[in-house]
Length: 196
Image 1 (tube, one colour):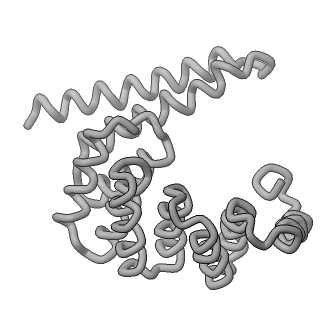
Image 2 (cartoon, one colour):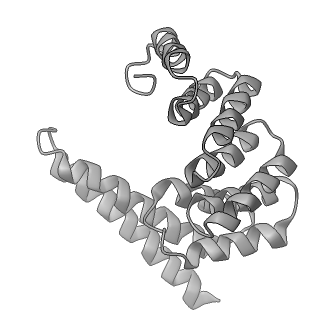
């Protein structure tokens, strides 16, 4: 409701009600935390994210997103600490992307680059959300080829939405626009590779 209907006040009341009805529901606290971040209420968001982990300490998604919440709070050292704990539980997924960003924000280019390399080599490259974070850090580090590879992957992934959206007028043309853009990114990446 909060992401699609833009009824922020109503969404807030529903999240508060969900937490009040079941204070030990870690998932309700997790999503309420996302809502609070979107509303700029970062300290409250962190409280709910931390409480969700107290309730469900072995939930990898909650651990990863605690690091994400610290990134939004601009507390990069805390983000690194939370994400390192997350990596101990699960070495892949969003943890690598968030670690790349946290290291970059702290001015640790070598560590950020290593996380980008780990992300580029991993099996979760089909995840547009994580690829976006890695692409941003690669761009900031001046890694043109990697950025173009990631941008192409993101464009292909997003294009699938329009390919599947059969009722949308001109959906086939829109989808082909995404395919052409993605292919152009990958072609440019190959050019950069050949030049180096």
